[in-house]
Length: 245
Picture 1 (spheres, rainbow, N blue to C red):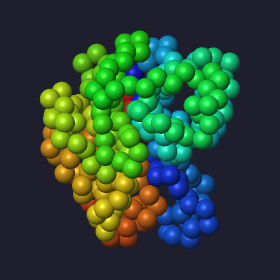
Picture 2 (picture 1 turned 180 degrees about the vertical axis):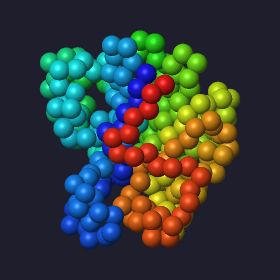
Picture 3 (picture 1 turned 45 degrees about the horizontal axis):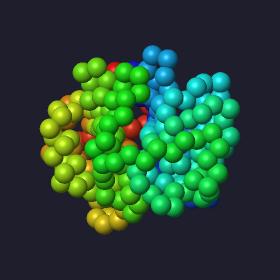
């Protein structure tokens, strides 16, 4: 099974439009970009999206069948791509947390996408992969997902400002092999809709996971880390990084 990130940044991406910080300038000079956090799984003959916030996601997966989408929540940087993907010639199932409004007119004009609300700690099986929804604390109703393939257990936890006790107990009980967690902010910001890297590290320490990574980084967080030569226990996922299980 392959897990690949299409982006690992916050909603602004990197470089940020017209930002002159050292990170954004460095990205421009090297002709790099990091899009908002979005990933997908490839297993055997199946492709499964974890969010669809990238606007041209329908082009990225053109000629490939998308077997399912597991949406964390209905913020634009996690579902914007659905506005075009819903015109697919294929029927696509999108599993998601409860949300009355969704995003834009996605519920009103579903077209090819079938929206499937799932409850907390519910499980869905796509091929040989099992997904379990994990409630997270965020400004919208949000799920992370436990992904199980053979004997591998992966926690995908974005976006969040915290993890409820019931979710922590559940994650501790499953002996995680890998975890990916939101760490948008640096240590200067202690409250908001996301975790900072110190808060994320404390959660990962509690989970006692074998291999753990941070994600959803902002340009200001990356600049703070580099300017202050900060050494982190867990590293951030790189844009376009892939993991093979």
